Image (cartoon, rainbow, N blue to C red; front, side, top):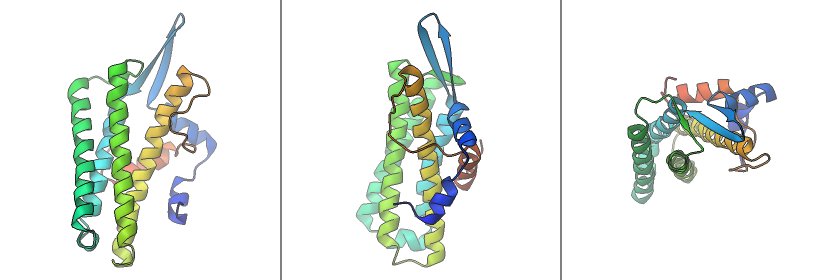
Length: 197
């Protein structure tokens, strides 16, 4: 269940919601073949936001000390998996501005970043919930702000891939997620997590 702060953070008009999903990808048609291209910088920003969220939460001394060592280890593993997926993607893509998501290799690389990003979000959520009664409210608020920002990024990433699936196969949705956050909300979330886009 979302808390009121997160609901307020994710609220946006339907026009802005549509814009968020469309800014990072475009489609072109040649005959019966539709090619979907995705903005590489956007994917890199989303991955970096996940890495920054884990670092931010674990840098809050009261939160980090209240989280058990095994849970810190789990977060560390998720963070490492995201870092590896992002590095592999960045190395493969080089300086290319867009990739073709129709290509199986690229789809696997992009999907692995989303999967790792979602795992970081899930692990941070479990950790923060577990220490919510043990840390000062200010520290808890800071941790939740980072988590809410990451949740916005995950929602935007899922919406991006949903928009690709819809373009390739009308009506298909990859994540079953709710409407995407607005572009302004995505930019705010990236700023909260120290990613300048």
